Image (spheres, rainbow, N blue to C red):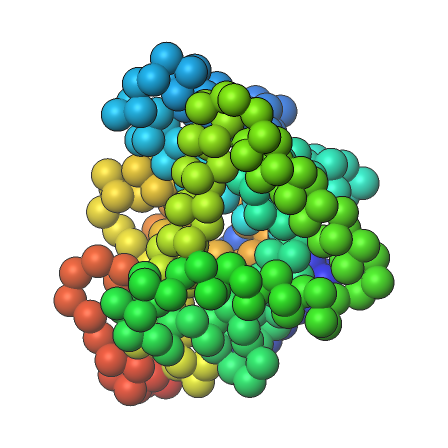
Length: 285
């Protein structure tokens, strides 16, 4: 039985039963193509700009690449990117080569996070208990801890994938050191910096002030923010219905607002509610 199936069942035990979501799982061929190619133009653009020594342009393009690749990886963890499951390992491997992090390791820790969000043993979600400045400053430690958890607790298959990906990442680092190619060195440094921000952006920002007994994730409703972050901040929606791809999270959010608004009180931006007030609102609904 796959971890993604277990994750969906864990979410089902907590989610509102009167919100329709199953019609949002399927993707059209055009959407699948979009999902698979989402990050490629940004990567190509950033590498071209770095080759031209246009680092002022390369940096925002690298940020856009990492953000869109993060969405691709995230949907792949839950088998919702639109490709058959037998292709998911290949998709994750390609993302590993671009992002320079072991996506198979992160899949393990991320699915463990979904099985018990913010609960005992949640290595990923535990980062949200940090103060914001610590979550930002200690970002490299978060990346190391999530990889270590996969190597420690992952299945033999997962550990094999993680070691293989870490070997490829090490080879990329060595190539960047040995080769006289500034663009390659730039990309390695840019991805190291991007990975160091994941704990703050992808965990702390969407879980701080929440807890396992109440509303365990935040969401966002500013349209321009959600477009800029490629729908990654519809996080409580994602936790409640992880089979729904990022393409359809805006529609899911509108349904949740209408049918179960107590779940969408906690926002990523704007007034911050405490975990106690969120828990009270959820149980009062």
